[in-house]
Length: 196
Image 1 (tube, rainbow, N blue to C red):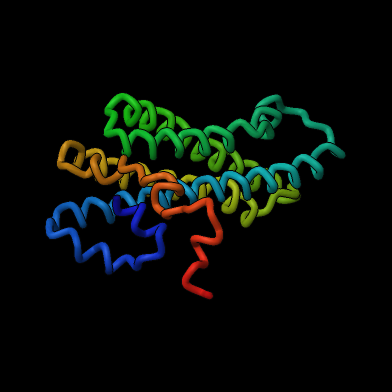
Image 2 (cartoon, rainbow, N blue to C red):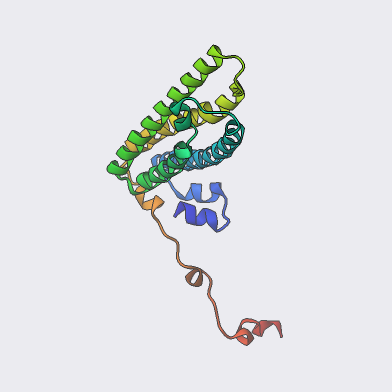
């Protein structure tokens, strides 16, 4: 219901005044933050994938001696971050403990992978200072997604604690269809009858 009124062009404050229950307002703010973090994860995953393409184009010219480096070059870490963010939003909207549990497990695995790769890259840079991988590239590819994932996990825990407090009704409210919202008359002469 809140999203529906917001989509209709009413300001946030307009429908915020309609809800007297301060607890629902607070819960809805956490859900809005959750959606923002979901979109941030998807954007970072897309940006990381473009960075991945750049790295592949640079490293294809040189030989890859270690199979672990080949594993790091696979883009599999970016696709799950998009999927788990969508699972997270659906888990919060439906207040599903099972989906949230899956989200926590996959997010923690992804976070640990990002930390592992970051440590490996730091060791590579320390061991051979002539590597073509820069610190900025490592930060963009692994630290920023790691931080966004950790912040999203913390916010998901806060949202998970609020399950069963009455927000599900607001999050799952479906607006009327377009034809039901706008009164439509097939006869154009009847619509513009007053203009004559």
